[in-house]
View (cartoon, rainbow, N blue to C red):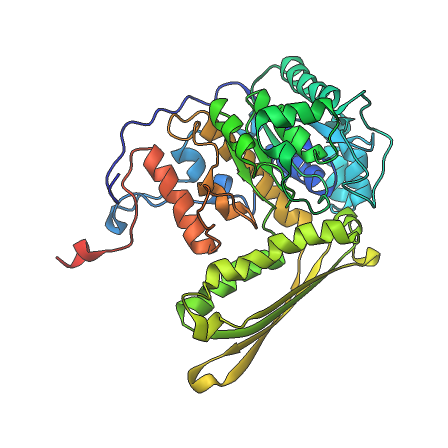
Length: 445
């Protein structure tokens, strides 16, 4: 469709009834997400950080003054209709898990205790080979991985029935698995299902969760850098079963800053010699990343951002010799309050060097929770939208991820401002509004 032209052929089913949110990994991010939604429903908090709840979308010309809230422009599920469940390797209720995570203060958590205590995790699929520095007792048993995947599928069906849900959406909020490349078992759906029967060691728990969701027609998002959805057979399964997918790896602290700053350097043609990044954090994520295999998975996700934004092949004089280093250090006293420190060596006119120092004392789960909310609401919207449900990958949701998924052979767009434009233009498109190009010549005719 030509830029700016209206689209009138998209049908979107209404968001009627309950939407079940299933979460793989009920740790700090998941419990902060659930607690925040309940606090918003009780009027105790505002949905800060959530585009679906607080952001507007401009429609038409600047002179028209039309800028409705996104949640009023597209038919999203109401927060009062969300029902939560999930899986974890520990049997703690969402309240107990949140208390142990220590993201939220007791005075904020206690009023939510009845709601959070009612959410008990189902036994998880877990493999110590993929997360070497964690272990827990609340895990599924089966003679092979096929049985485990089937148990997940049964959990999904039972949760939907017992909670009277009209629709479901699923999101991975679990740990970063050890680094993995695709193997023969990932070549096709048939190969994968044979691998389940044989308990192939190359099939990870996150892949079993995604397989179970997509087989049940449930939209799925990958909030970690694991090799999960970015396999051709998973994408085809998503398209076939109209179960939209998005990922991967929530874009929260240090990488968020890179996707804000790097586009600015490039816009002004400011050169970059090096970018050194280090993190300290003490939550479960930090503990898991002490394992070199899990760290490599995370490192690959974090390192890709600058190359894609700065395009060194197009601008070799400015970005052709960047030294980019990322470090993550487990530091228990800091808990979930991560510190990301960046030293950025830039250069300008006549090659003169300059420096920028960034010290971001962020709260990882506080930044991730509103992303999780937006992601599940937008996935549910995509599943109800005739134009989006069969696409498989929802690239328009790249805004939320460190390593956005794309069609084969297409480089991902990491510039957060372009990502936001893509997201809002997609919403305009499916609602029959003109796309915004910011050309603006019509004001001067």
